[in-house]
Length: 171
Image (tube, rainbow, N blue to C red):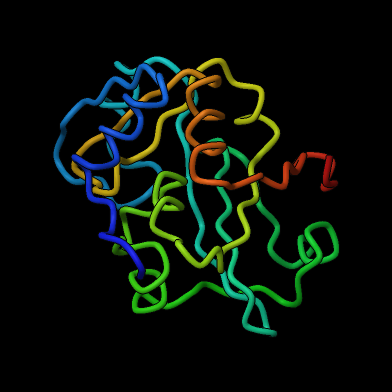
């Protein structure tokens, strides 16, 4: 990577700089969707699941979806223009996004200096007033308003591919 990778503190400073009005809550480590429900219940906004994927041609994908969204990986490739999808390795995840399994988050796109990862955003999240992601560590959750999330993406130069997973179509 050309520059220093983002960590939690550097990410939160970036969110502050872009006016994202981030609110971060520390909590015990959460590794999977379904864990930490009591934590999520106290935090306003949409909660997320994030999938780091690789297709058969080696292209990388990060899907951020509302936690209850059903993602059919077999039907998804023609919608997003990928080849057959599988989960990316922990090593590839750390190399490209600078996080470990369990801490996958859209905020990690800040570490993808080479823009190797295509970002796929669930329509439900794209329309949510507030979204919650791990701040590069699974021991906290950071919530931002939609405008703040969009400001973050614009600052790092990432334009999401928005997908309506219920209709299985790109928007």
